[in-house]
Structures are given as structure tokens and as C-alpha cells.
Amino acid sequence: MPFLVAFIIWYNIYAKKNPKYSRTVEDKLGLIIVGFIAFSVITSALPFIFDMALVLIVFGIFLFPFIAIVMAVLHALGIIRKPYNPMKDKRDEQVYYNQFKSNSYAKDRKKWYQTGTKLTRTVKKRRKIIEKFNDKYDLTLTEEEIDRIVDASYMSYCWEKEIYDMSKHYDNISEWYKSDTCWLRAYIKVFPVQSISSDFERQRRICIETFKLIFDQMNPASYSTIEACVEDINTRYFSFFDDVTFMIAHRFLDAVGYTYELPKSEVIQYESELERLKRKYDEEEEQHKFEQRINTGQRRKI
Image 1: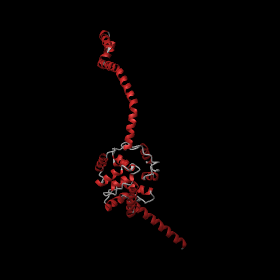
Image 2 (image 1 turned 90 degrees about the vertical axis):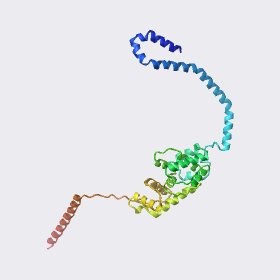
Image 3 (image 1 turned 90 degrees about the horizontal axis):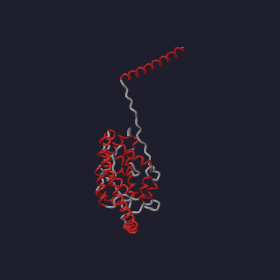
Image 4 (image 1 turned 180 degrees about the vertical axis):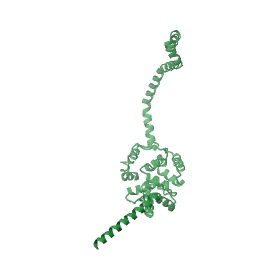
């Protein structure tokens, strides 16, 4: 505050009458006064801030043992879960991880395993996440299937990760497919009736068998385009395949040892009437020259 008083005295006695300072200071007079007031408040509050920081440090030192005990109890009750180590856990997720560790998204899943879950522990909230995602992207998961996924998420880190990813925001559903479990997400999206298993490895086998059955019966190589093949698949199986999910299924089957040829696109060439007449004239001209060579050869023999 003394600085503010000194500034006001200086301004009224000297700067206000001096054109050199009057024009500069007058435009910013309000800002300067507010700055002096803020500076005075902060400097006067510094002792209080230091005292509070000291008190918090002292309390932290004394409360640390109690906080450690509470954290241990929460871990024991399962409210706070320890980081998951895939190298020590021998459940089906470890089998799954080993089989797909070469996948481009495997590093993300390994990081997830090592850092632990970030998903809510409440059954109601997990169920609400799936229901909201189910409605937003027109999935057809039933109440029973949603319950099965929620229950499985408490024993399967893979299912837990699926729910966690459903809680994220996506500008387009293709962003959701961007995962090492894109085959599962495509399966859930394209089929109006799914078979959901709490065992993640069995769920993988279900997806393989379903996609393989469709590709065996439809034979994509027999179609002229992927679009025509997708349309026939959707008509026959009442599914909702598009180009993206079709290619996800194709690459997934190829990764597990089932290779299918894709349609070979044919280029359709447009020929105008003028080009058709020119082509016909050239063909007739070639035929005429060929006949002349034959006749010339016959006369030489005679």
C-alpha cells in the first residue's frame, strides 16, 4: 500500500503536469493502480501462505503412516487394485497377449496391463457406460449380454479394457475400431445377434468361426467388387458389414491362418461413338492390307 500512495503523490505533483509522462500514465492509470493493490495483497499474504505450507508439511509427516495403513486396507479389500503384471498372471489374457504380441497395438495393451485399471469399480456405472455406447453407435447388445460383459470385466482385464474404451469419446466409430481387438468390435457392430462369452479366448474363437463361415460360403474372390460382396453378405446374413468391417474381418482371418482372395476390380473403359468408328475403320484397314499381302504372294507363285 505505501507504494500505491507514493505513486499517487508522484502522479499528482509531477507526472500530471508533465506532458512526457501524463499521456503515457493517464491511459494506463487504472491498470497501474490495480497492479499496486494486487502486489500489496500478495506481499501481505505471503507470511500466511508460508505458515500454511509449513503446517501442511508437518501434518503430512505425522499423517503419512496412517495414510499408508489406509491404502493397505483398501488394497486388501480390492477397492484399489495393484498394477497388473502380465508376465506373472497366467490367465486367458496372458495367452491372448502372447498370441498377438506382434500386433501394432500390443504395446498399448502391455502398457495398460502394467499401469493398472482406470475404470470405475461400480457395477452400475460400468453397465451405464456400455448401455450409452450401445445406443450411441446402434449396437445390438442385449441386457443379458451387457450384464455378462460387466461381470466378466471384474475377472478379465481384456473385457475391462473394452468397457474402458467405450467410455472414451470418438468422432467416428472407426476410431473405436483402432485397437488390437478390432475383430471383436467389428463382430459386435455388424451382427444383430451375437454370442458373448465371459472367457476372452473363447470369444476370440467365436469370432474366428463366425467370420470363417461367412467367407467360406460367400467366396469373396467370385465377386467383381468388395461392395457387391458386402451387399450379398448383408442380405444373406442380415448383417451390417461395410468396407471397413469387411476388411477387418478379412485381415483378422488372414492373421490366424485363413487366407481368402479378394475381388479383383475391373476397369471399365468408356468408348465414345467417334472412337468406336475409328477403331472399326482401323480394323477394316488392317484386314484390307492383310488380304492384299496374301493376293500379292499368290501372284508371285504363279
